[in-house]
Length: 125
Image 1 (cartoon, rainbow, N blue to C red):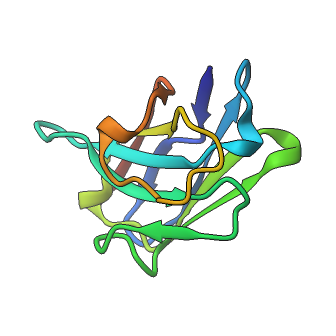
Image 2: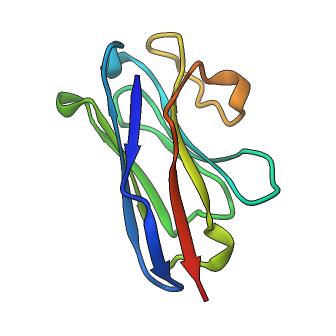
Image 3: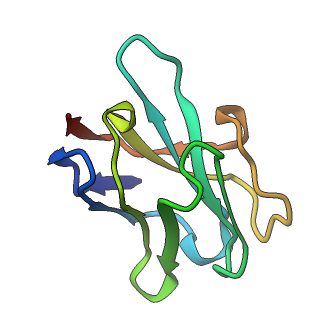
């Protein structure tokens, strides 16, 4: 089970840090990702991190502004979001893959098996 938190209302240019705590699954061996779904849009990839935290990948739309990280000892993954824009407004979801010690960082929803409930981020202009 994944539980996302940290969303809220922020002005453009501001920052937020999302957290996602895992329970009931082997966290430290799984690649993790953040996705988002804006109003009237499909769910899209934001960022991913491998099981050790040594490899990350971010979508072009957030590269340089968002940073994904993890603390395996605390079963938690984070998404630090800086320089937020109104177009970042969305429900943000954390997700975990099914397999262990996967080399490839997935960027599509079908590659992730476990999903959190989502946390809403609203960026005002």
